[in-house]
Length: 401
Picture 1: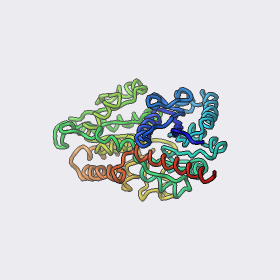
Picture 2: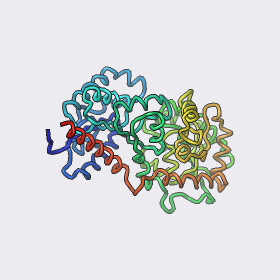
Picture 3: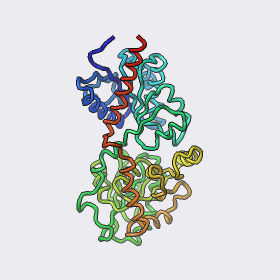
Picture 4: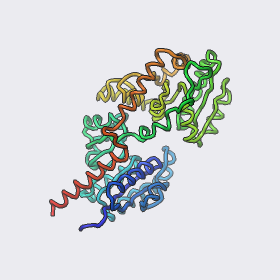
């Protein structure tokens, strides 16, 4: 059957996926000219660009084991509802976006019932961090995978995963928002230093790190009398953080919201941060940092897998270090997270020291490493892969007839 307009199905499970999906729709519309029909599961951004959502995305947008278990029957129903709706729509391509517990459950069932529908995955699960066997399993039901980190295509190749394309990271598309304008970040030799403290975006991270970060800041402040502490917080944890810092001798200024966070990054001279995507934000902003994490097994597993599979030439759990393949950023795990050790490293970053200069030079290199060739944007690169998958599928169907 010939259709006058292609049908694209996109399935996301949370806000970040809705944002990626909306950018992809914009890029596809630019490429297709005549447009396309969009259906699937998405939020307000995708709906605003014409996506007809099978149900409200909030039904499956949950985090944390307790929340998932509470909604498990509904989530399971939504998985099967989504599968039925995708097959009924018979799209030219299905794009699953992040949220692997939900979206990959959909993709596996669609592949079994309708193997002719090409499936593109957008955002690789962290197979380089844990459960590496997922890569090979994904190759059965994902035809093309769009990766946000430059080392992930090689990881999937080694693990037997699907064909993987590096399409850039959203952060690298918005570097200007993180980089200081003239006068925003004072010289390191000037009076007054700004230290960012970022103990994590989850309650469990706050509980493990806020106390030791407070002790670290107190030690730094003894030698750095003109220190300003800024702590960007996610809104739902603001109360817990304010209670946790109430006994700090030098109180941090707590800011909420993305705009305030980016403004703080642009002023900062150094940072003490929990491991995670925030380290990539700091690196692209050019903020030297010390990274710490306390966990029983997760980041130890990253280091163990790196040694086994040699994903990177550096044994690290910090994204900028892995991407740069250099132990640029000091990192401390579990028992290594000691206030006196963290404080000494931070003191070096708050003056014009060799340690600071080395980080500044290496972090400036990160943007180049993450940049896509030929000046492609992330959304354009992603759209090209999706369109290629659609074309390959159409070619196969033509030959079959």
